[in-house]
Length: 211
Image (cartoon, rainbow, N blue to C red; front, side):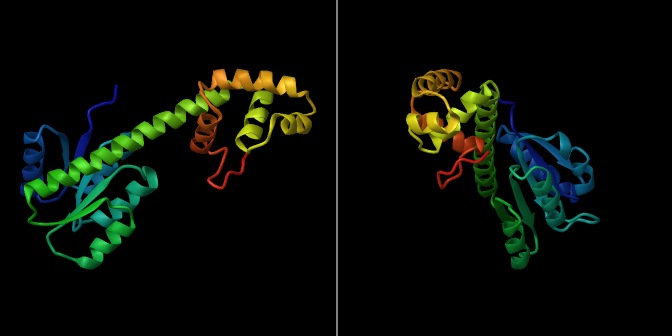
């Protein structure tokens, strides 16, 4: 079961931060506030999911600097940047660095909540993808070396006879390995195996097998 997502609000303006916390709590969202980017960075290594809302202009570490730190340590964690200065160049920089949205204060409550929901939806999709990839890698780890070789041959588009020739075994033996790895990978078809291989990184988008 996925833990409840938390919104992390970072703003050195107490009134703004508390207002955002109240808005999010009223909308039924779990929230934690931080008065500085430095305070938030101390807990960042423990954060795996959720969403960050950060002000741009803060002392010591700015919102842009914070965004850089987040993208280096957890690139999939969505960040919404807010500012009261309408600085277009900062907006462009934030989006280039990977911010999912940029809001100018004062912003509409519905606008912020919509941005948060969109960010959480993106984060949930990322979480599901990570879990699926981890599951595929677990299944790959359970394959024997020969089963892995047959898998790589199959997802590269090679016929059983070709795989048999390359590995110095009989086509019938390839069929046995193929049946075993299909069971271990819980794949219903060759196309399932190809999708798994792409997700796991053993087959690139061009269809070439990588080891």
